[in-house]
Length: 332
Image (cartoon, rainbow, N blue to C red; front, side, top):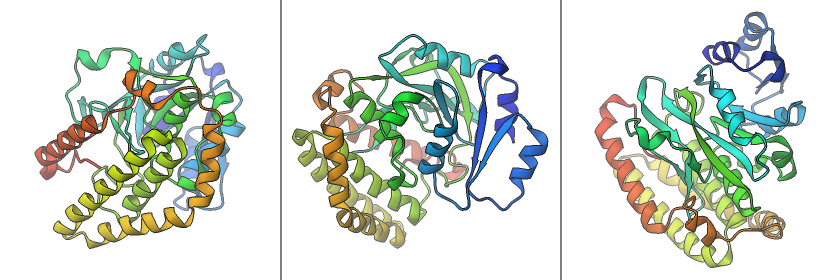
């Protein structure tokens, strides 16, 4: 409810935006509560839980404006947030996505995401995760993607490019959308004054949680994103590194007694292989629209190199170790 309350307090003209809540078949009475407390919210009710991707696509199709903002229910926006997002894209035909600055709701001086960097294994990482906020994170710049918890996307581009891939269900769809944005020749930027406070994974468990189903989706969807979007020159190396990364993660999960985590990594690969024909069909459609090389993404510094990815993984593990007892910061 705090998310909707913050939207009610936006400085943006009320007649120029609408709020659409897509309900995934909830049974806790929350829909009725929203109707009573926030009558300005338009509610779309689904019959069951369809995850993150399909419901957002349904909401996008019913939206009336030129821009879409995907906003998680575990966020609180600042009063000038929407104005800052729109200001970064209005009048710029090259920009299709704008990333918010996400700070942790319980540590408002700590970065949750200052945009994201694409990774050559099909994933990505949040820039600045776990760092104290500083002038470095107050600069407008290109980013690989925006965190799906609070990102603006041009509606026409989103729908024409296929929206969030519904086969993902949840996890990794933001990396796929960001890569697709750059692949098609467009840009994603970071709006440092568009500040959002984020509880992080209020629905799907914390970033470092060992829920087997979350591990499964992260791994499987990373493979889907890699095969769909990577050029041939990157695909082989990305797949080899991805397999090595997952073998390492399986060892880590096993060493920590999380046998289910290791099992679900294997299940993710099995499902990926079973659906490879469908994925390759999507790849052909995407690659036919390519307007920018993956090497160009690295030169623009919106995609990390393999060495940068390893350094970031080590940094995140250090952040996880430092805050492990408080359960506030964890690496995926």
